[in-house]
Length: 316
Image (cartoon, rainbow, N blue to C red; front, side, top):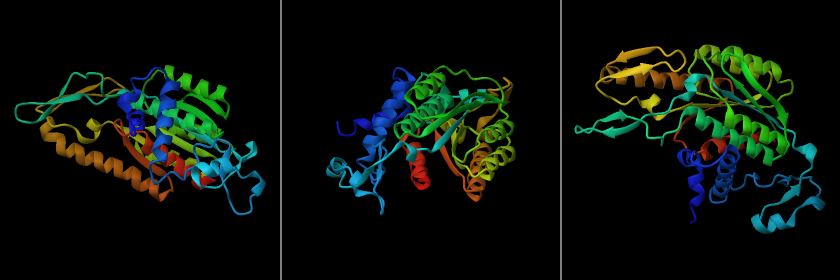
């Protein structure tokens, strides 16, 4: 069917696929199919060895076969032209292990949590699939990609390379990674900023459930070093909306501490506080020329990939 590609952009469908490489492949292929059917078809994502013609380019390198397919001029691109270095920085603290509970309506029409049926995916699952598809897309364009995982410190660091063997290492790490303990974003992100010696694109993937001022200061460190930054905040729908119910037991994913709460009394206050929390990140990032994109674990992956691709086009 014409819209079959869309299902491979839906997180719950991607989670049923075999391994990380297969998931990344299907996300990117679905994304590329969607580009051809959208206003964004001008992006040259499909041409790993080509770029759009610019005035002054040698016309001897025009690819007429591609022109015949797209009615756009592309020139053959040589390896030295594809030297963008991108750093995918992934939060692997325990708070990322949370998944929204499944919900059902009671007789009064209110929704209440029930045991998770396996349909909802966790923040870390969503983030791994997003990181894998970004890495796959970067490698297709022969950009150098790095993966950094962190909690209270940097846990793994893969320096940027553009080879297929390097991509396999990254995908293997994403497939097998284990979540650890608490979060110390400021220390970890500052350490990543010190590693990056040449200006590049930094993509941070996290729920950002940490001290906001500390996180923002660390993000400014990347900008101080002239890096471009995309911040993907990953939350579950339940974390944003907090379903009303008679009572709830809240558990800290990182410490195990629990709190009993009357959720129908605190629901409105919670949603107000969460909205303020999200808006502060957006406002402060805007002031510092950082792209801040808030996604839920139900957001199709093309929304995030388009943000990356738009940034990459601007950097060219």
